[in-house]
Length: 279
Image 1 (cartoon, rainbow, N blue to C red):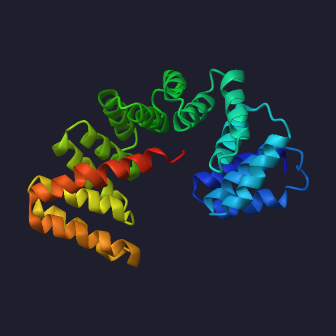
Image 2 (image 1 turned 90 degrees about the horizontal axis):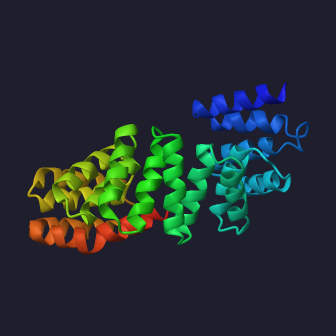
Image 3 (image 1 turned 90 degrees about the vertical axis):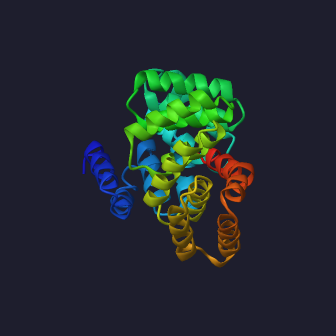
């Protein structure tokens, strides 16, 4: 099969969420294209989606060892090894951004990397540049909002996250993070709406259910609060049940008790952890 047609077919399978099919297709032709960085990169993407993170890491390292110049490969493989705190990630992501400044993915991945490595102001600059290139990309809007939240610029963070929700309204993760950031901006009623919507979209996300329960209870919406607690209980592992019980006790104690747990403990900790998640 022609190399470009092969990669296009693999990416089409990925778009269809058939990552097993994409991985199998690329593995079948890997010997023939072993010196092609894009082959190793996109196989790494497929294997990461299948939960084979260690194998994917080796694919990304192999792709970068072939000295690619394609900004999509540099950005994707660089971001892939960044998940393992590999110091080589910075060089690959910087190369993607600097050698192709008009390609949004390079600026996006480099900006997200810088923000999470503590260079938040530089990260925001890169993410703004990415947004200028592609203002309709919800991932760019989300990562810009996340970086602004890391900088404690809550007004602009909520604006950017609102754009991300507008661009991808079915993305439950973004809605939950938006809700948590609205709490930081002291906008509880709006936060409760986003947390409830995000929790319903992310049915297996126990912490999202619990945050939504506390937000609803803080506003006196007991019916929504107990619904979310039951959703959390049904999906909890044994280790989570203690927290579910603790949240239920706070809801039973009244809206001030629920509000205190949400604003002083669960909400800030959830936001911190979710902002640290790499794209």
